[in-house]
Length: 412
Image (cartoon, rainbow, N blue to C red; front, side, top):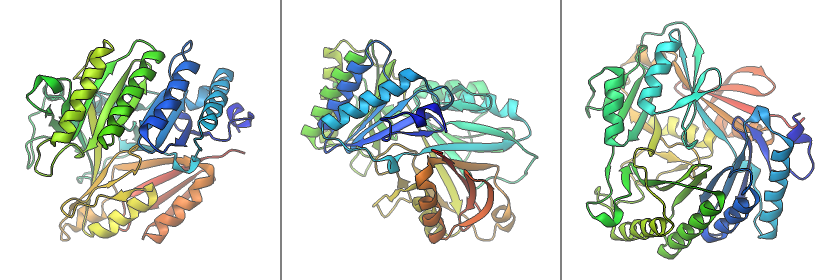
């Protein structure tokens, strides 16, 4: 048990892979923004923690898991007290961290490749992470070579200039059906997709489309962050459109969510364009400047013969929902805090690849009191437990052998 977990007044919080986290339910973005402003006031002297504002609530993350301090405990207590004063209720069952793990015998080469294509930074002894801490961490484990193409792959969408730089850095010409794929030294594939402007008009010049429509602004202080979050929340609620507002000590990402900005035919809706323009005006009124190179979208794809069966497993183990559109296979986090997964049809005759053990798997960190619930849901959806490595880790496979490690942090 960590010192943080032993402390009084932090029962709203759980220690996961990325530090101590809490989720507070809120009936609207405006209600959630009221908590964001309180957090900004509480952290004015020490720096804003990671705060993710959603239409349904607020997630807060404090410190790295292995280095939580007394100050972190006090901040967690104060945030919980503020949330309760505002009538917001914590739901620890929501909390999870998704990480992608690659097995390799050539870690140095793979780290360099993935750092360039994702625009990530080193995290810990064997990982790479999004500088904005929005997209999943990528870890590398030493393993022997496996020659066949994996059934799990990655999509990343970045600004066109960042995509060109990534291609040049890895020294590859893109390939594949869409002409955007790159591969690391082991053959693991990633589609590196260039984004585009949201529209040609200057009123949305700060926005770009990276599967989701998003913008990023640098921030000077927690107080400025709180004020901007409140402004964006009010605009989103008035428009009746959901936005993701992810605040960090150095800046804020505003994200409309994958495909939520468009009309089904690839064009932005007039309602979203109006909202984006209003957000841009609010940002510039506060003296904020956009950084178009900072945005990024990451999702994971799984090739499957029986797409419905594999899709059902992953929706269950991750607590995801099905995208309602008939022509897509996405499953997504209903609070849009974790990455989208999608599924592609695989040829049933490709027997060798179907039986090949992937080099890539998912690590899922959940609160200790939620692990068995996730395991039971995954097994009920056709999964199977293959190893029980320790009391806090179980390895499961979906109906076609793709692996997920469920990792629980125990309170005692």
